[in-house]
Image (cartoon, rainbow, N blue to C red; front, side, top):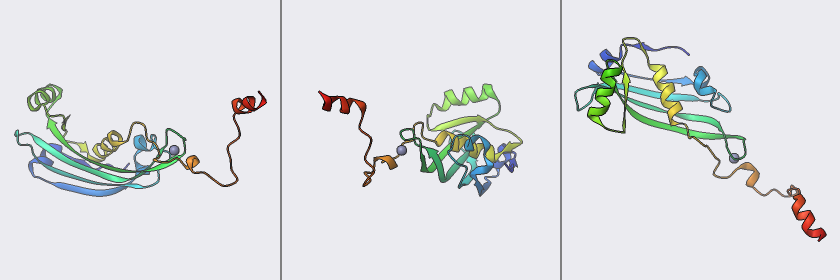
Length: 162
Ligand SMILES: [Zn+2]
């Protein structure tokens, strides 16, 4: 994965923005969760300040990824679309303090870094946005196909014999 290192505190302070597109194949942890590493993620990150006076990053990740359907185990396309707000803390203690103070489930508090790889944030975001148990609205096997009837179950055969 080609890193995109920034000082996350400065990035917020100067209200910088960064955006790009990265192939899914560049994200090892994400690819491991997918049925293939086809596709790409579009991402936008904007630095700023939360109303409570702490630095924040607005993160938007979208793209089409290929998951494994948990019902039929065949690949399924999934449109990933995730927007989140990351509030920056100085360290773990500060993170706990901010979390308690803001008490807002829509926010994620992370420890900021002077050498933050933005692509790690993008990958984390994509991973968190994946559905836990992806399923086709209609699995390919559900579609009745002419001449391809299911084999009768042994129990159905037994019933006929009675
Ligand atoms: Zn399926």
